[in-house]
Image (cartoon, rainbow, N blue to C red; front, side, top):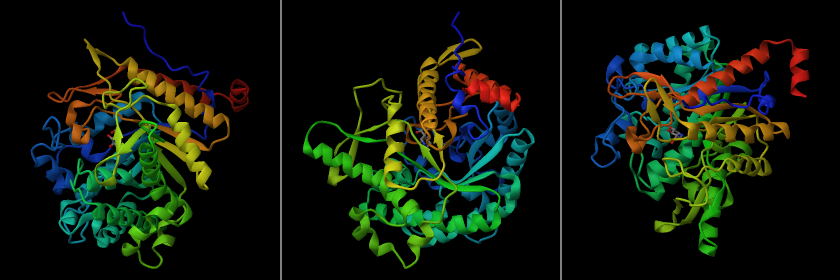
Amino acid sequence: MKQSLSFDTDTLKPLMTDDFVLGIATSSYQIEGATTAGGRTDSVWDTFCRKPGNIADQSTGEVACDHYQHWQEDVALLVELGVEVYRFSISWSRVFPDDSGVVNEEGLSFYRRLAEALRSHGIRPMVTLHHWDLPQYLQDRGGWQNRDTALRFAEYAAAVATGLGSSVDFYTTINEPWCIVHLGHRTGVHAPGLRDQGAAVAATHHLLLAHGLAMQALRERAPSAELGIVLNGGPSYPYSESNADAEAASILESEQIHRFAAPILSGHYPQDFQSQVATYMRPGDLETIAAPCDYLGWNYYTRNLVKPGENGVPEIVTGQDYPLTEMGWEVYPEGLREVISILREHYDVPPLYVSENGAAFEDQLDGETVHDPDRFHYIQRHLQVITDMVQSGVDIRGYICWTLLDNFEWAEGCSKRFGLVHVDFDTQERVIKDSGKAYANLNADKARIMASPREKRIDCAR
Ligand code: IFM
């Protein structure tokens, strides 16, 4: 008989306040399936998955968790887990299936029903507009290499904000633009599968411009929602003591963190990027990109160990100093503190959300239960780092765990499981793992604390 796992509510007490939320995240392509239902058309990921060799286990997002059909069951799971926020993304090609500019009401109403169901259970929807599944018809016209895609994105943002109205508490424009640029346009391991340095530079600027233009559209149409963007990354360490590795690490820090954070938070590109990006810039772009954000989401999983790769592109290599997750990523919770310190050192940082954090580990299935102690410990250690940061005055407003369900993990297919809930991909049966049960208990403890009289709460926190 295994002992049940539980988070130490006492040490996490600084997070048990009205100013901090606990949540869970997913993304459209990774869970929805139903890729041809309700008028949806292909995204770049549908195309990418069709090419043999692109996905480790040859799976696709065609069915994934079939969340499109099972969404009510999934809302019930979120209720059982007791989360305060659910971060999900919208499939752009469900809302605009073609380039006619006409909204597909069927696509939009799927998300409206979802947001309303969440709110009816007291869960606050955090909507990401773009989590990598760019419509294929836009890719056919150059995708993020084409400035026009940024303008189309603003129209899409406007349509979503108009259609979902006040049922959404938070909007995120784009999830992890660095991944879209680096993995999608430079190393080609993600859709659209390009290996082209020039394409990566153009995509960087157009993604940032898209963010800025969408901020304007959202501000006008969703004045009460909190608006921001989600960036990602960890501190970069040289793989060895060589100067070349040190230089590669410093280049990666600049590319992953500053190339995105500097224009958004300070209205300029880092010096080492200015001449490359100049070709794509027009007067006023930087002002648009630097539109004030209500929050910055930061996704953190691991640190980077870096050495120079092909054509001067920094290469992230697998470390050996700390335990590894199934992704081959080191478990290094301190890196979260380090990356937030880098941000605070360089920028005037708005309130932060740790908008993704979690781990793929092999689960032990045991009848009706799923044991995943490593995932539990991973989350616990990161929550502890966040608690310490909150206590020392860093303005972090929430922790959003990645992810609700085992799902389609991009180029890794369905083989890497990050979920708090186990999914049997043959039957679509969902079973809450031990880590999910522990998260549910933490959320229940928090709800109990929040329901107690304020004076008593303050007393407990001392
Ligand atoms: O699954 C992804 C997610 O889509 C974006 N952030 C990282 C996760 C784990 O790789």
